[in-house]
Image 1 (cartoon, rainbow, N blue to C red):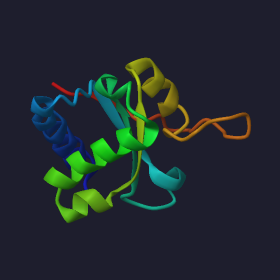
Image 2 (cartoon, helix red, strand yellow):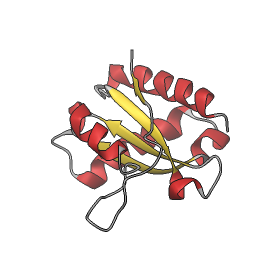
Image 3 (tube, rainbow, N blue to C red):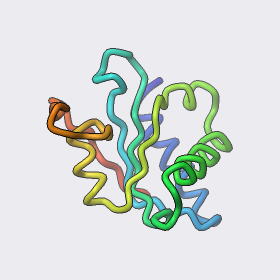
Length: 118
C-alpha cells in the first residue's frame, strides 16, 4: 500500500465524517513494529471531538469510519489505531511511534509526518 495514497484516503475519510460530528485535526502514520513489517502502520489521530469518550469508544468510532470508506487493502495496512485528545499529545506520541511510552521504550529514529485535515 502506497503511504501517500493512504494519507490522501484518510484525509477524505476524516473530511467525510465531519458531517457526523467527528472532528480530527491532525493524523500521522508510523511504521508498525518499528518498520519490521512493510506496509503496516500505526495510525495516530488527534480527535478533539472524542475527548469525552472512553478509550475503547474512541477506537471503535474511528474504526467504524475507516471500515465504512476504505477498501480492504487500505484497511489491512492499518495495524493499530491510537487516538489522542489534541495535537500536542499527538506530537508527543509521534516521537514514540504512537505507542504507549515509558522509560524502557526508546524514541523512534524516524518521527512520522503529521497531516492536517482540511
